[in-house]
Image (cartoon, rainbow, N blue to C red; front, side, top):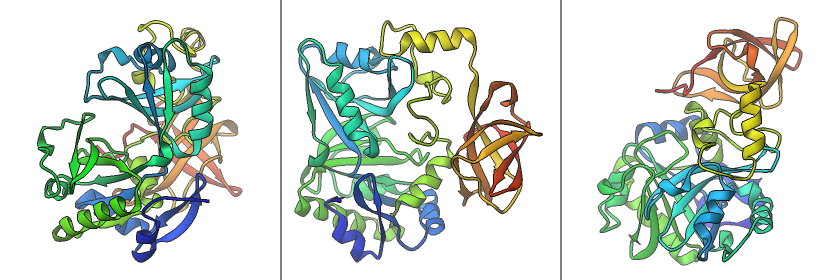
Length: 360
């Protein structure tokens, strides 16, 4: 199993370690609810070094990324970031990703569990003067999220963090270490940063320790994968493998807003356009469960006696005090306000379709 440069620190902080995407990762420290609330109310730190990073170099880098991804890369300028997806020819999703415009190259940030598959797909679709560099094993990444994340990090850098707008980034230094300082996150918090540095253990531990020292006045906490999932679900952020996969196109996953069918040709465009013209057969919806039991991925969803789909994601919402989730259901049954039932080990849970995000 792989390990990130922070593994010894996770153990020192009392983390419960599990296998995730081939890595030894912290699933929780003091507990998911406490960690979740720390991010919503103050500041938390996530090790997300397991995420994948691929650099795209060459004269045809723009044309290549524009063809590879569904969003319109032409609107990006240096220092800007775009949420996007990659699709197969049949419109099914390879992955969702972030595209960073780094000036003379692009940085693509992909999901940890998909790194090998994604990089193979990228290589198979190379054309012209394009050079791909899979630097996933060379990067340490920390996500610092929550209302006090900016105040914490500002102590460690000369870069004016207040001037980095949401979905923008700068090359700078954190405690003297070269870093990409990115105003992004997977929690729904608007005050949120992701820091990329070299995966050297000494540098990584120096950054971690400096962040915790700077955030001590805000009762900063380390956050595991468990709370990362509940935080993202409250804002209905998609999780590849749950909310979408190779059998789901971006429209069915509720990602029409990152699918620019009018930008010109891209992988999967024809199939996605055909699906749109014929009408979506299924949609991803949000629901709240009227029960103490939690709905989980893969459980069947019913309207009366008719099976209409399956649960994509499900978890308790610490902020709402209710059990929430997403489901892929037949379009005819996807209307907000509709009552549905979810089969949990033979028991039918009553639930209602609601607008997302669950938190506003």
